Length: 154
Picture 1 (cartoon, rainbow, N blue to C red):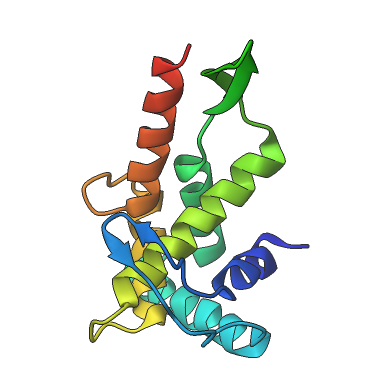
Picture 2 (tube, rainbow, N blue to C red):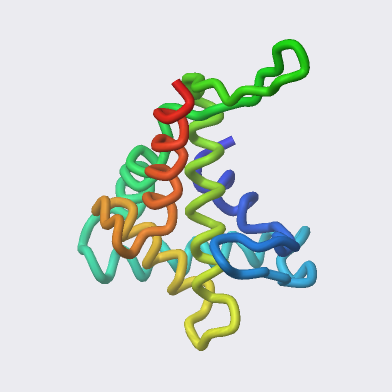
């Protein structure tokens, strides 16, 4: 499956149902199963990115995924009834999956309960993640947080 189609698949999600960075996002299945709608959102975001940056939007998406993919994660291991967090390396497929999930989650959070629509929010997040703008990109912040927690669990 191509990276663009995987991005569209990640957009087709319900709300988180729990707090994600201070917000409870409930989209009530607005995007679930609506692949053509998700593909139109991705296509619109790519056209916005191409107009703003005058660069290939697919190349910007790839650099955004590379920049926002964590290299190290942590997992729970229990020894004798006591569970520890242990740092582990992240496989390439999981890195791609986590990066796309964080990019789409950031777009959904930015478009939730505001006037900005999901297409603009996704375009903004792709641009910020491609530029490594940690102040504005949720995906970069999430990657830094995951790697920091993994460093502490070494």
